[in-house]
Length: 615
Image (cartoon, rainbow, N blue to C red):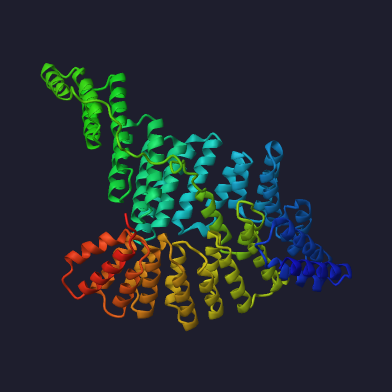
């Protein structure tokens, strides 16, 4: 392969030297399909094809190549008018990210002004924020708020109020900041409820994550607590066990930093209960931490001169937690502390009597595994208050979305290269001359968007799915097999009900490839809501490949209550289920089952029992 690439590159260079640039470009395009090669080799091909594009007077293609290479002077030259102003702005933005200090601010300002010229006011506002120009940022967000396209989009409107409130605060206008942030909070709470009602928990989660950001920026512990509690609840419903504990850890850390000890101890207790129910080993560790935090709560109340009854209750809560992990030495210490409180002679004597009962107790090592440090990390929350508004502003324009990816080194090189390929396919189809893209070209672009394997590809695919030609919609469905996101299933739902058989078949094939933990919820919904036996079978096959305990439970439910051939599919999937923890669940169902599924459950339990590892 290396020799073949070298030969192809040599031929392309020879053709370019002979001024046969069109033929050289075709050879370079063949090389660029190999997105897995090392940077140096790939960059050499890009430099070669860029020279061809310049010689062929195809400046936009050359500009995108230079954008990938971060050759900013040549990219700027390529995107000179009549190219859209937003392309020049993007060059300035990427250049600013690589600069520091005042040069970076100056470049961000230039980018913001160019975005505004190109009517990209969200991108302009974000660039003004990065330039630390709050007054200009505020004006940009006000222009977004006046955009008539925002009407009827409550979620996006909430985000604009949120950003406008933050900008007004930085601009020194506290009244306006408070007004916009309150409006944002009201809208977010309302929209989150609507998302949850529609079963779009991942979008509700985004609303709660923004409330977290609001709580952090405003210093409001109540908003923080509401955000964390709801984020944790949504994560629990999606059975993302370790994410649940990570959010508990984050909530706990912030609560301790703010000396909200009663809340922190309660968080530890809830985390312990959850860990125990989820079959994780950290429940005792959390209970021990809860007890120790109750001590800190009691000490703070004493230090602040609070009611002695609150101090007493905190020590009693600590005793309960210490008892649950068998730390009787700390139980005795807690009673000692209680006996010193001004609770009256009767109570003091009672507590001293209890201390005497624990006289022979010595401090021993307690088996209470803590949540590991390598998982206890602060969450770097994605800036969805920017990202979702940028998605709204670009409105699924696949060229602009790929242009935003191609130079952004936060994406993997392979994704950036594939985005460049989509851009070159797009320009091959003739949009520079204003021509309409034909359905075959759009179908190819759709599949290229899927190969990005990036969340940013979803909105362009949603837009392309609205095309009247079934070839384009089939291309969208084929693209979805690469996109492992819950949101992907919104289009799968539509594809399964498409009027064209080729689209429905492509949707089925895509669904068969989508088996990942977050897919459990949408797959079960498709199974329950769709009457087509083929759809039910494919959904069931994907559920079986998830191999989570929830998927195992669902397969048992199908085995017990559905009809053939679905029962046979569930029987087969359970017999080869790749999670030994499902065996106790199956045994429990076998004990309860007295109907026709008993024989099948018995044979499955026997088969899995043979496969189970010896302890």
